[in-house]
Length: 236
Image 1 (cartoon, one colour):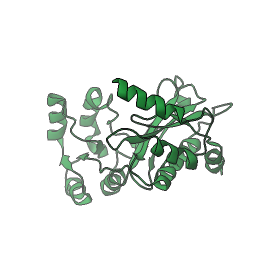
Image 2 (image 1 turned 135 degrees about the vertical axis):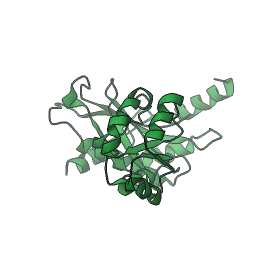
Image 3 (image 1 turned 90 degrees about the horizontal axis):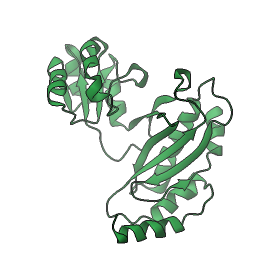
């Protein structure tokens, strides 16, 4: 890190008090202390009171952000028969069948942001676990990306559907937009994510569920968030 970048982040961190902020106060503060020269991604990170080593405490799901992510995702659809045409009409960027499976397998090709597959193609797609799995691109029925309703799946991904899941340290990282978004849009997106994670609370999880929440940007400081209002809304 250059000394200038170091000074910038130090200055930005000094502007943030070490206390939880309400989301509607945290977003404008994050935008105010911005110093990066590019349009940073804004992310919410939640620390959950679960043990991800137990399958029944794994938290995962998908949520469509009301204001999208600020960029349209490149969607690959792996399908056969009439579903190929359906995918093209729905606005998929790349459509194919076994040829796509082969290209990914042989060339390690991943020039796309999301993959949707029809259930009949999963026998072939299953072979791509080593390439797609580590990148979080593997189609999954739980996230709505293995389906015969191709048009809906493509439209949801394009509209800003994001996936959330706990990592091995019980953290959930979810992008909620770009720094250039209007503050109220970032607040809406982040609120939607937090409420969805609250609703996905495993029945076996005991004690405090959301142990901490941080709003941050690619280069900016982390701002602690008071999630109480969203927790109440999520339980309602």
